[in-house]
Each structure stands twice: as structure tokens, then as C-alpha cells.
Amino acid sequence: MTTVRDATPADADDIFRLLSGFVRSYRADREVFDGATFPRIIEAASVGGAEFLVAEEDSCVVGYLLALRMPTLFAGGTILEVLELTVAEPVRGRGTGSALIRAVQAKAREVKDVEVTVPTRRAAGFYRALGFHETAVHLRWSTT
Image (cartoon, rainbow, N blue to C red; front, side):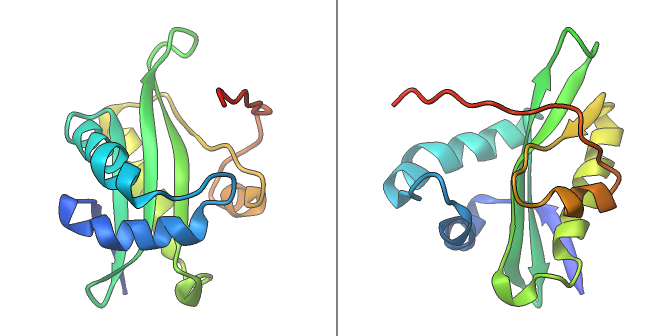
């Protein structure tokens, strides 16, 4: 059985392990993770600027979801954008990712976000099955 809960600082090792298997366009750097990004995301989640969730099975973290909440003018409220969702390879296909998405959708309803968005290249079918539909193309400009 999958349990979804808010991520905590104690989840750092498990989340970094999952991140290392997830990231494709960048290199997961433990020093940057520990010293900058992970603490900032935990803080943002604690004040409502993000949703940072983990999925557990048998007390083991097997997935995580990171979504950032952004105020907008065009939508007349906040948008919650799912930026990272990953599930450990051995448990994929058993509903863990869907449980994480349903949990973040519930949180978006609670705080009255206007919508939940997700940029994706490889998982459009997964998100469509959970009620998402295509609305835009994401482009990227790198500072490096």
C-alpha cells in the first residue's frame, strides 16, 4: 500500500537516490543538493510556495513529487506546476505516480490554485490518463 505525505529533511538521502536515477538533462550534485536546493525546497513547501511529497511503501520512500506554486496575472490566481515526479524502477506501474499526482491535485484544490500544469516529454499519456490535457509547448533557454 502506498502512503503519500509531505517530504521532510529526514528524506534527503532517499530523495537524492531517486533524483539520481531521474535526472537526464543535468547531473545530480549532492553538495548542491544538500547545501542549497533541498533546504530551499523544504522551506518553500513549509510556507506554501511548493508542494514536496513523497510516496512510501513499507516505510521506504519509493517516489517523490515536486511542484512549485506561482502567482499569475493571466489566470487570476496561483498555478501549481509539477516539475519533478519520479518513482523507483521496481515499483513503477503499480499506481505510485498516480497516487502522488492525486495528492498534489487535492492540495491544489485545498489552496484554490487555478490549475495544475506539468511540462513533459516522455509521460504525456500518463498525465492524460489523470485528466491533464495539452495546452502549450515549453521552450527552454539555458544560462550556461
